[in-house]
Length: 314
Image (cartoon, rainbow, N blue to C red; front, side, top):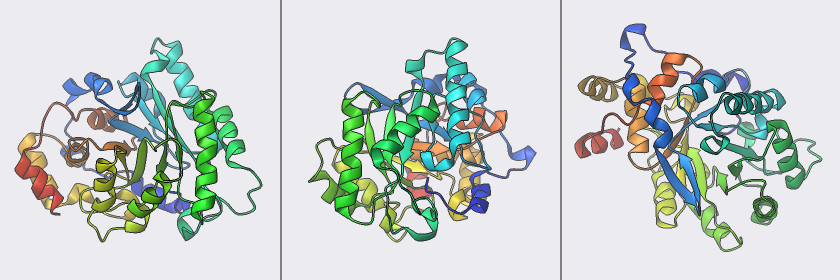
């Protein structure tokens, strides 16, 4: 995700009446097996969890519940990075192979022109992309699986220079794959002409009700960017898959609620399933165990083609 003002993070968490929560535990353990190839020899979980200051995901519970994808960023703060690293180490100590766990992190691209979303992340920043990568890995306590450029810089020249540092990190074995976040189709088109390694992933805001061509096309949240990625072998990933960061309450949408009742699952599961059924990996957030279990159980049911189209039309 981007880095909006601190108070906005509360939208990451869904508010649901206890009676509306439907747990389907049977599919939880198998979530670790649902992955998509993003680079040679690298597969990414379709379900990932992110945590930020003030709204952390319970990384330890996620891993013990069968989740394997964890998402973070250098701009989320030292405490968030260190906590995720400790959760991974604890999981490995408990017997979960490190190769099963997939850690995604992001470094900022500075300077940038995204305004309030990235306010303060580049102000007075004396470091370089290479220094940011090394600091990120240090805080996390080890190499990562996917390294993203959190957003484009102010110019494409600056963006390419930052991306080149990630290419070097890939060559050095500090990450297994590299990619970008919040890039639109035009920016991707130019970037592809100027880099050695094609981005494996483009992570953008994308959800039911927030994906049409009029929705934030400047940061790649639109269908046009998704289709561009599909056509160029770039895996598309969705942050804010429940619409929370932009104040969109997908979970109370009558159509989503109706389809959820028909399948005997929760609205959140419908919203996430709509994405993963398109091979879009999701980065959601959950702290409570019942929500973690629910978010992992997306593969015990399937939406019909008509339901997919109906949800796309919202």
